[in-house]
Image (cartoon, rainbow, N blue to C red; front, side):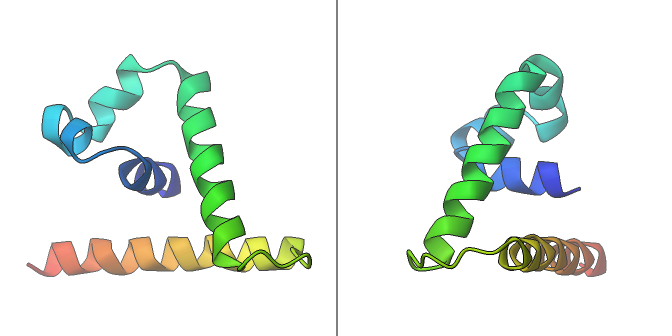
Length: 82
């Protein structure tokens, strides 16, 4: 799931998976906080990946999210193969 993948990247390793699993974190932290973490991380990474251009289109964001999903799927498949 994209949300879990982004949260794992956004939160420090000491917290997740260090102290608790992503599932436990999602149960304990209010949904609005999780949404804020997800949105801020996704927006900032997208903006900085575009190298500060003024031409930030919706298609570029869609392509960025699709790339994240593809990279998440490939990492999941690698874990299942091992």
